[in-house]
Amino acid sequence: MSNLLEHQVEIIEDHSKENFIKHVYPKRIPVVLRGISIGPCVKKWTPEYLSSVPGSQKDVKIHVSPSHQMDFINKNFAYRTLPFSEFVKRAAREKHEEYFFTEDEKYYLRALGDDPRKDVADIRKQFPALASDIFIPEYFEPEKFFSSVFRISSANIQLWTHYDVMDNFLIQVTGRKKVILFSPRDANYLYLQGDKSEVLDVDNPDSEKFPEFVKARRYCCLLEPGDTLFIPAMWFHNVKSLDFAISVNVFWKHLEEHLYDSKDTYGNKDPLPVGRAMQILDRALKTLKELPEEYQDFYARMMVSKIQTKAYKS
Image (tube, rainbow, N blue to C red; front, side, top):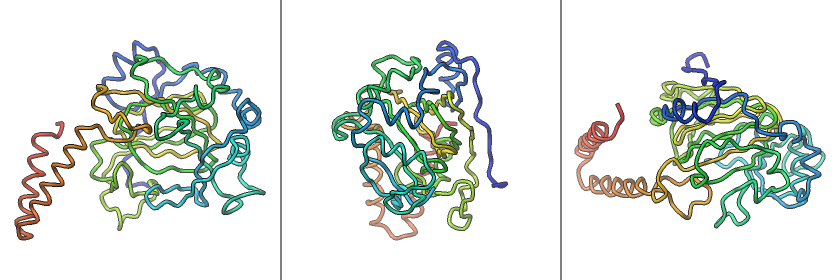
């Protein structure tokens, strides 16, 4: 841990829309907005309350894992279905009388749209009895709204490091979360598979397997109930729930509408020009394989140098 570069995410007390739009948002770095009124949810959303609201008997699809560190790449969890009220009761406990794998298994809900193939997550639609309890900061135009994702986590559960292609607010309602973020500029050090990092234990990484990871600068914050974390698009984040925790992510479109995949209901597909660029790159690399290895190496380095010169931000 001592070898890892770490910086604290700035906490902003002036959370007015004007200050955010003019002075915070253009910097494209994470900040914690503290003191925003997010509504009665902070006090109301107890396990007992959530288990008793209208619609609490509907089934939800959840992640269940015997490990406290969920790994999306190697899938050390399983998807299961439970009534929402039963899920909440289990997630709020450390030991379980009824369980799928072990008595201390961990639970995580990432709410989905009614039909995940067609509908985005929206707390107003999937959990209407709860939606009026939370006030979402109106810092962006309504047409930029993409989704509002309801999340519930067991205590001491850590999710995989990944990035999103849209800006978002992580609104912490109950419990505390430790969030570690990495700049898009440090992507080369994160050992990526798609949008996810192979490094599961970010606090104690395997230095032999991931020697470059120590070069990635860490930005850390501890979210308390009522805090809102601004996570700009493409910033990697790793989230650990220190307590039974409830939060809502609100995603909005930072780019023009036509640059996003209209069939993407999760909001995690790269912008359309990225897909085209990656196809061109794959064809270029395939073409280089017609040459001997030493030529492949040389011209691949030439390509990397050209990308750095033409596309990297200074």
